[in-house]
Image (cartoon, rainbow over all chains, first blue to last red):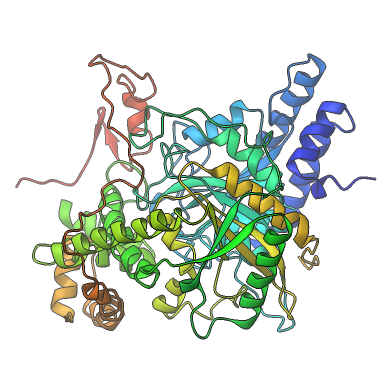
Length: 491
Length: 100
């Protein structure tokens, strides 16, 4: 008997269309896997009835010859996307019980394409974190184990998405990426994930973190599945002022792993002294694979790379402090009203009780760098350095079409290891943040395993709007890596 | 520059987050570590560089000035707007008394 939870998105779509199995069989298998996988804490809310409802619609659509691009495909939805009638929390107590009366543009597009929802996936609180330990609903545990036997981080902030996909609790999921929140968790769990060009996916209905950086994207086990999902998620939306008014390319139909004539840049600043030996070796194998696919390899320089992380940790908290001002205990979410408190006290008590430590830390950093007397020294300076980081990429594109780098500086680390040291945690995003600051499409694909048996990711960064180039190079890596490892079931 | 607990309290007050004296003390080294680290940006020569305002060139659009141009974000949805309020009364958001 087929294990339906081991099917890819493309296989489910094609199998349902061909009548090899029914969409209901697929949804039922994933619903059972979600229930059996609760030890991972990947889902905050389970919606088996919605998955079945979409599956029944898919089976009816097949009978009437009316199949849609994602008919029969159940997916997980990061709990940062507002879903009408289903609690949406951003993994924060302050939004506990919030039930949006509307649907985010991205999720609405996915449902319109025939997909069904298995549930809302856990994440770092307000997408702030790299290990999924800041969730108010408990940390997500990676399905992967190494010889230490310790619980490992699934990455963050889309750690519920990455854990659920690698554990076969969903074939694909949405993610959002502000500084690496799709790519780093994908790398940690041996799956693929793509952040498109800023503006491809509408931000409308996504709980805001840092609006100039936030971008939705796809996560799945194969490059093809990412192309399929991203096509359904992308497109112009008048309700998002930064949405790009451009047609959505046919990324899946145009997939090609022949990289003849493509120039791949290898940024020397991404190989600092003291780089993890396994990460460096994996990168070298990736370079050889792209050469084998016909690409020309060339060294490039992105001189301001070193300043990308501190730039990000001024700009992102600054925007967060402004965006999160809306959580006031008046319009939605939790309210804490101490005896005899006035309005200001209510705001302060509500926010003190509702936000987690990391969220408060970032709001306060953001408030400080935007405050009178410090604004220019911190915020304006960071925005100028951001211009220089973006120019570095523009200069690199004179010499190459795509960049290949590691996704993260290490494989997954044990939960708890970096939680007490915010700076050590921030350093996880060192290779992913620069592309976010420049708004570029970027993708992580699994390359191989460490000696301890944990996945390592490779990152492809592309020019603005060149998701096709990114996907194609990722496909060339995927074909040569032959990554077939999956976590052994212990949950 | 480094901050002390009274600065932490001022920032917390601007951010409308209640912090106790103990919490403020705990936050001093945490925030100083982060601020000390981001201060390295001061080394970068940014003379003649404009601050970035948009990563992808994109002109802001105008829409026709009509009521309910988009029904999803238009009006006449009072009950939906109030549906998630911790306290809604008589069709309004209710808050503690502001004026004595």
